[in-house]
Image (cartoon, rainbow, N blue to C red; front, side):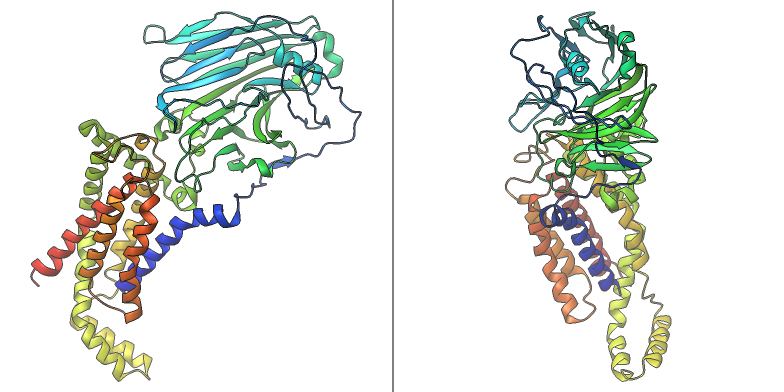
Length: 547
């Protein structure tokens, strides 16, 4: 019984680990969910006027107004003369570079983190000069060009925050000859990834146009990083509305999609970093669209006679569990642990707290993983002990079981009755080893995902050749060691079941060794240490402990 359960568990785990890779490589990207979404086609209307603005194109269609998609391109003569001023804002963990041309975000660096080339992470990726991040746009191309390319008057050109100056405010003001008046406000906080934002638009001479406005985020907002496990984790545009997390791969975006109801955020993300627009007052919809081949997300403003007053927040930083939970607005749902992980996500936070505690003691996440694994093993020691003892008892009665099965092979009812009497006589429970193992599965899955998605492990060294716990062991030492310990564990486990099951169980260490070659070193270290502790416990029960 125990052998069958163990085999089923290990095989299920293999399927669970390989499933994400199978979907990405064989089935293609995850389809977009349609719950709570309104996808509105462009309705027939007079062709929108096309105007030109410096070096950019954008696509937009507005709900209910039935707008055709609009494109702006650079004119021969720049209609918005003036000098571009770049405003730098340092909050400690983030460095913002904002242009007074459109009040847009040109750079967003995270000095603590480096990309694959060893450069400081910049969450802004716009090599093709598409519509910049945090641009404003309208359902009129001429107004959009003004919003995005006119020069705003900044209240300051530099903000450096620290403990003595915990808050800084940047105001960008535009008074255009068309009668359009715009005030964009950024409020930054020291040691914080969150920015409070507001946009006030007054367009009294344009009231008859009933202009609608949006703030958009994109393209690529994730930084030039990659992960060996990108095939498991979605990177790109994501919307959280009506308690549904919707991923939007660029190839699935064919026209502007609007999200209504309870819109909590519109974001870009990858495995470790995320940037999100969070609606507050004066915002009514979330949206996703594509410009060229790049995805964008945004928020639609509530407007009355071409005027709007909207408040929203902008988060751009790491996807650390505690930080996202502290920011509320369901930002924690930017972290997707997969179907299995989400079911046991409530266990992830305490495990990460334990990991952080040991890091505070050891200042090394490798040793923190080892100590945490020991604590978890100690916590489940009584259950594991009971499971192994049950397996040892089942091994002792196995010869009698075979005799009974042979003697009553044509009478299953009598065979079951005699086996129950045998178990009762020897005080053996055939399912005694099952329940303890089943109780540990949720903790194992939670721990697996806590380590797999933890940004704390990114770039964290352990010892010698392990310089980054978030990537694979470069010399495959720990995967091979893990396979060896798994093989020893199998040899120590009582041989029960038919010969085919036994052969499959002995073959699994080889399969898992190759499977774990590309896994983050932190995960492999956890599994290896867990195997070593299990071997010690098995040896004690089977070879040291007396009956």
